[in-house]
Length: 263
Length: 257
Image (cartoon, rainbow over all chains, first blue to last red; front, side, top):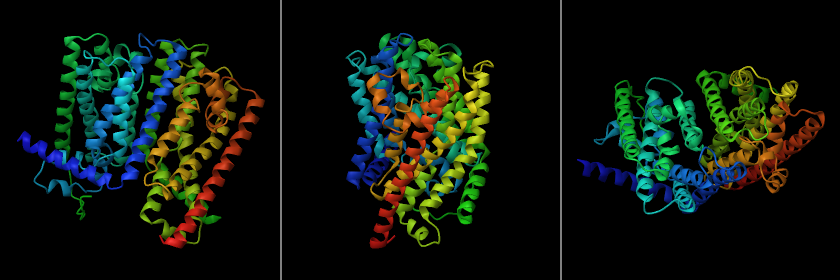
């Protein structure tokens, strides 16, 4: 069953990529522009860290690694599952989920992997570049970083599913739901060392931006078993909850009677 | 003229019909200011008064949330899909329609952001007011001009759909210029001098930093200097929009919609 699932996912990804890569010049322009866009963030933080010195024990190398991880995880999520954050709420709102429901495939996977964002490849590439540039990539930190890429992607996907699923209950989620997702993304792009106390706990267990914003850096600086458990367990629990939430909401879905073509 | 007033009114009323978005913008403004405030607390404010920093951030975020990519996406989609052809045969200027609607949306959002932002800043500072709080009304007036500049810029970015398959990347880079060169999160005085000198040649510090700093560093010299630069850059953006629009008309006339 897992094999069929992965095979279907692979086919969806292949279709989405072919779709986007058909306009090659545009694809590469978007990749380059996104990489330039991401560089601005890193340059801003580098300038400020050079001015202010360390921020609660974090130096410029930590912020570059954090930004690299955020970009790479977001890139993987957005490249593979762009159908969630940008499209799910719209499909539900306009009653266009029928196309996916009527197919004998997993509905959530079908929706999530229905779109691919070319600029996400730029995110992914620039993320890898900054991870390497941080100077903290080593044989000991590599497994942690790889684990974070998977965990972070799962967290982004879960958040996108949660937000998109709200469209089963509320109108206009396509607009304000995107804002919520961007706020979450913004939380992962701030130096994680600024979060302390209750805020840190909330950002780890309730709204797990911490899985991307500060936990990986803490593990690279000081790997602990408990940290690794958090890195694995929290995204899995969050993902399971988001899937449950989606299927709960699906019971409320009413068809829009729209004829549509998957495209 | 009355047709453009009708576009303005329609966009204005439509914007007000989505209360969730109004609330969401204020929630996001609060959270972003709170998070950036935490950063400033950790780095020790570096010569800035904590109260002034919070008000500075709130002013910037008000401006940031007062415009969005809706108009840019609409124009881009109209051009790429060819739907712009339907608009061009109608008895009004498509460009003026877009600018009018964009201004209507902006003016619908900004009062809520100004009032809500003021309350949020007051609460986050524990009832504190910035050093030159009497400059707030003037700063808000200049912010209206900044908002028109940014909204017109969105129209220009959307019009770039004439040359590009996807203008979203350009919009994101424009936003990053606003962050970095405009001093959205940090006053540009914390930057190295070479970066401040580069920024001075762009519209961003005039539209963001110079407007917001009036809340803690007010003098009429800054006001007039900022107003002059803002008006100059806004007019330049209008001209750029017109030039690209003329190109669009030429291409559509020759090649069809």
